[in-house]
Length: 60
Image 1 (cartoon, rainbow, N blue to C red):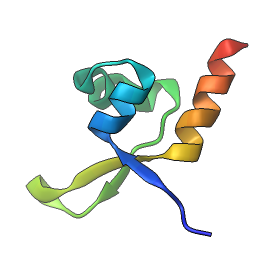
Image 2: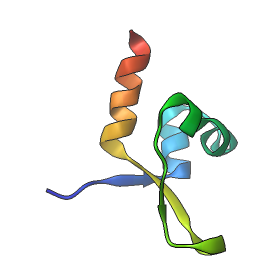
Image 3: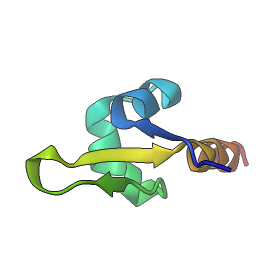
Image 4: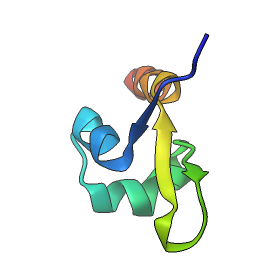
């Protein structure tokens, strides 16, 4: 089973947040960013399953 990821822009749109919010606040609220690559070319992505689980926790 492959793990699906979404990039920062996709995650921001999915959560109805800004891209800046994703970079600044996501780690503090429990959304774990995964970094692929190094330096300026590194790509930050989020696991789709973790983003969906985080949304469910917010409803509580």
